[in-house]
Length: 219
Image: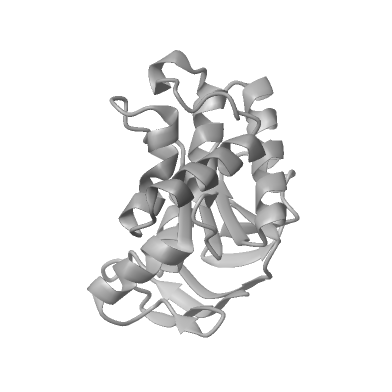
């Protein structure tokens, strides 16, 4: 389970960006956080990922604290345990779809046979089982985001974090990607947290929270 307890973060002498943020996300569940631009959604996501530190409070995934510790150790932990889905896809254009999906496994030192099997399973899981040899520039936006979901889940992370995953997609592609993300998260048993400004996107999650005026509350 992902647990946030009493998180607070501010910048400078002004009021905090957010304070006393509490949240639980069980394994196999997908929670969306909505809010206006500047409300602190992305900062909160970065803290959950261990990429930023809170002013106070705790972030735990099962028994692991993510809000403090050695930066190098946290980076290695993220490599093994976190999958990211970004608005801009971040696929490498000079690699095939299969090689893009295999990157997390390569960084973890998985052998070629295991990489090929896991990549095949991950692409089949997002409905792109025949796309391994394709290049990213031959795909639609929705297809690229489904490849990004496969890459985020191929190493079986305990935590999936998504930052505006439908922000660059048309409505039909966005709905297909959201359905794919929800199914993949439930199948993998990961805890998933998505930040978005879109109420339509958030409605596809298992639960929705709103970050506004420094507080996180049920939407």
